[in-house]
Image 1 (cartoon, rainbow, N blue to C red):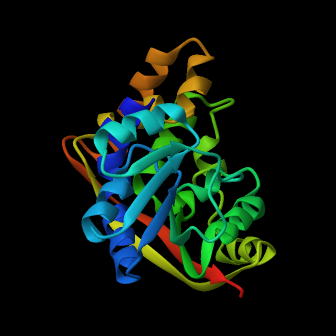
Image 2: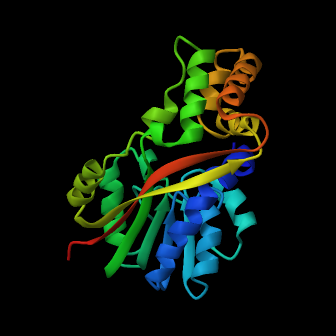
Length: 255
């Protein structure tokens, strides 16, 4: 999964937003940065470039992602870590960042409480979450194609998880429950460019948990072919471009 994630999804979905989030991080002039849910290092690379004087510790729950990221970006310090049980001292970081990872935390207030604990008194928590599925051109096309290919029981991973935490009021309440104050919530819409609709379909089907759900059916190749055809009909042949919306949040400790 990390290889497919890196090959098909990172350049299209994550790199455009990583550049934006890293620029916001650099403007805060951090000295010690902790990255949560770093994946294979899309944001890590931009952080190291934008804030070269800061130390960056990159973490992910998935050990395979950590191994891949540490090879890709050895300048960062990589650790396998659960965001809900961070292995770091109180007040160790003046900036915690997380790109498109908070949606996966089973206990978000609990994870945010850990963020508060490891933040220095004037520290900031900078993170992003995808908007509703309808605001993501590639994701919406994929889910529609998947539902056409699997009319009964299509996996609902995309609407339920990556795009299931898109209400800023809910996010603000979770932050408040952890003792964090939301300073800003800004919607950001950027374009993603993919080599083809087929490459996006391959990325979703092999680089996300959708892969396991489809594999369990026993007709993986038939589903892939049907999804690819439908996505190509929707997005067009050759290189394809679609808009994607996310919300970027900035929070701080309440004291």
